[in-house]
Image (tube, rainbow, N blue to C red; front, side, top):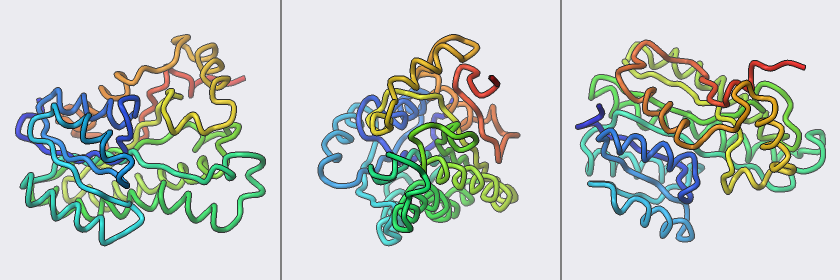
Length: 255
């Protein structure tokens, strides 16, 4: 379905990453992929995962550095020659800002969470847009969570940053729609990733979701990957500015 297409995935850390589940789905449909990593510590993990994928390329990138973002997309243009899909699976907040009360978040903690988790989507999409437009359009896919809509214990400033991310999806969709570029987000249920383990009470969150969700289970990584494949494909050509919940229906439940 995606043969001859090219994409770039930001946020792969290890084989349990949501970003890696998405990459596997895209690659399985024939898409050639570029990956980024931040720092030498993660480089080996990403290299090992990407190695079996035909034609994959890797670039270092700190999404907080505009010069590094520019270098990545110059590399994509040189090595892949086109760009059809951008996957943004990047988020960060300081550990101390995921503990205690949101009220105690200081100015720097708020800035860091929003810069890495929300503004980076704007910066990456801006850099990707000329390449996508040249190819007749493209699909930008961001990852979010229900904590952007409702208070989730321990999510704190990350929930506020994800709300900013979701608003950014809508504004970017409005800007880029005339250029044939669609921008959407996937709101996945809790998944046992390295990043999720940094949230206080995460194990209890998994149990609660499985008990309350209409499907009476937690979402699987494969299901998130399949949704991203749908959003990257022509099957979703009429969808933009949307937040698609892939959480076994948890978001519909009230008291």
